[in-house]
Length: 353
Ligand SMILES: Nc1ncnc2c1ncn2[C@@H]1O[C@H](COP(=O)(O)OP(=O)(O)OP(=O)(O)O)[C@@H](O)[C@H]1O
Ligand SMILES: [Mg+2]
Image 1 (cartoon, protein in one colour):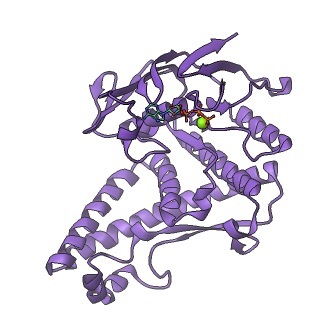
Image 2 (cartoon, protein in one colour):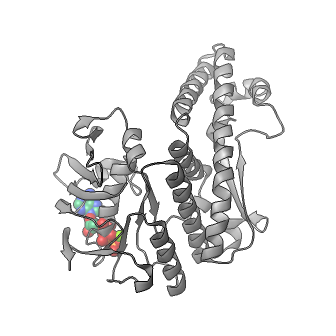
């Protein structure tokens, strides 16, 4: 769902900012350090309850300031979403009332981020890839979140039992059932996602055949229950559960080789664009709240032709886009898309005619 208003208080150098974003493309342009990425960070805080650049939200607070508050109004429903945090933690609000957790916000404002470091999804450890796939599953499968929570509880209890020398079998049953359910949901999601990734890759560039496979987190030819039972003593030595859905990975290859090793940085970026566009398409198909795109440092490492293609695909998707650049830009007329421009200067955001 698009945001029709955004209020930011005390987020990095943005002290008090209110803006009325357009329903399609919103460009924030200005000099380095002006506060452009911080605006995207504010939208990310609303839709995901966290930042894409600091795990510790305290780093977002300007010096001497206690609280940061971001609120946004959803176009259509007029619903108000809010995230506020101080040095002790964060709260989430819907229409002014405390929400139980950030998932409640996420459901209403699916946010997809593409930035200069997005290619780390390919090169970093499996955690980012698990997060990528689970965010999509969360949005298309209402049963996923309760199942994931059951799984986390069982895993925590089993790890505790491993360390304290207690009996494991009661936790093993629950862990196996929830891990198998999570894996089924992840596989079903991938089945929907892959054809869309192929579609977007064809439109963006001509990378050789791409494959995405889920490594479930234990040997695929083995029964998970047996893996837990036979690995029990080793797990006790390590003090944690070494195999399971919490160790799953998404293996991304092009022409049979790991994508991170055989494609250029620019191509990695295009692959990321295809992954994110495909994810938005799957989520938008199943969700009454379409995804909002955050595209940071739009021009970096994409040549003019590929920048044009990405904008074209975003225009076709007809979703709200917040993007940053150091230069002002215009959209080709044939996109038939509305562009709302803001100039950002030392934490001040000014709409431009
Ligand atoms: N915790 C903080 N408190 C106050 N200001 C901060 C804090 N963290 C970062 N800043 C400042 O916030 C400003 C905005 O940073 P931001 O990354 O949003 O700028 P930007 O416009 O995206 O720049 P670039 O073009 O270099 O990407 C910077 O000047 C930075 O020094
Ligand atoms: Mg920036």
